[in-house]
Length: 67
Image 1 (cartoon, rainbow, N blue to C red):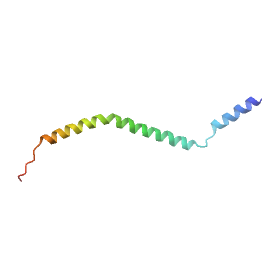
Image 2 (image 1 turned 135 degrees about the horizontal axis):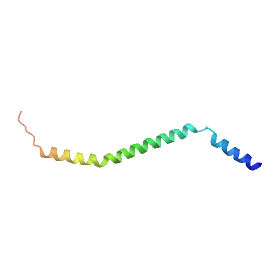
Image 3 (image 1 turned 45 degrees about the vertical axis):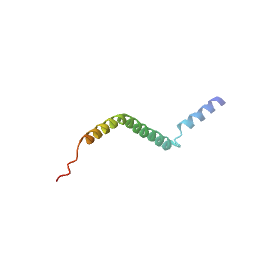
Image 4 (image 1 turned 180 degrees about the horizontal axis):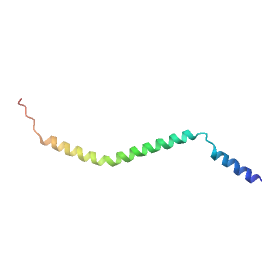
């Protein structure tokens, strides 16, 4: 009988809702950070390529000082 009592106490601890909002915020924050990391990683290389092309284009142009 004592074994059953300990098991039911453990289940009561699992079913407790204390701190549930904290867990929700931690999971939500981790999800948003992961999403930002993945998005940043995906566009990092592409922005470098675009910046190089813009630099080449601007560097190849001349400025006309006449109005």
